[in-house]
Length: 304
Image (cartoon, rainbow, N blue to C red; front, side, top):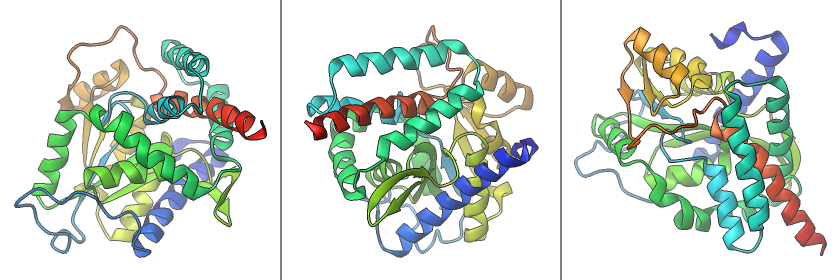
C-alpha cells in the first residue's frame, strides 16, 4: 500500500525505514540498550527466540496513553526547562491537529521541521540522560495494562516484541528497555561527533515509513512478515498493518475501526470510554511540532 506514494515520498519513507532498521542493528551489535527488566517467568530465552516472528507495537495511544514526546515535554517543564505557558500552547496545537480530522501536507512539513528543531545542536548523551529520568517520572504509569498483557502473550509464545514509532529513536529505545522488549524502530536524526545536526535521515518514521522500517528489519532478521503481528491505534498506520500477516487495531480512531471491522481484524479497546475528540492526526505528529517549541525554550535558556 505504501508503495503507491509519489516516487520522492516513497524514497524518503524507504530511507527513513532503512535508517531506523540499521540504527537498531548497530545499537544491538554495540551492546547498547539491553532490556532493564527480565523476561516473564517461564518465557523462552533470548537464544530460543532468535529468528522468531516479531510483534510490532506503535507507541502513542497504542502502548501508552497519549503522546510520548508530549510527556517528555512535561518532564522538561517539571525541571524548569519548559514553561507552563509553552506546555499549554502546544497542548492547544495538539488539539487543533486532532480536531482537523485529516492530514495535510503542510502539517507533515511542519512536523518534520519541528522534529529537526527538537534535536539540533544537542548532544545525544544529554538527550538520553533527560529521557531516562523523564520516563520514570512521567511515562511509566501511562502504559496500558491491556497492552502489557499483549506484550507478555507474545513473549510467552516465544516471539519477539519491537516498538515502531515516530518518536525519536533514543526515546523509543528507553521505553523498549524499561519494558523488557527486544528492539525499537524510531525516527533517526543525523549526528556528527555525538551532536545532532538538525537533519533527519530520510523522514519521520510515520505512516509509510513505518512499513518500510519493518520490511527492512525483517529482511535483516530473516523473518517472514506474513508471520508477524502489528498493533496500532491510527488509520495513518494502515501501511504498517497491511505489511504484516496479523494486523490488530488498538484503541482505534474511527477510520481504523471501520477498516478493521470490514476486514475482520482483532480490535482491542483499553480506554474506559471513547473520547469526544477523535484522533485524525497521530499524536506523534502533534508531539513532534511540540518538540520544536521545547527546543526553542531550551535554546533561549542556553543563550541567557
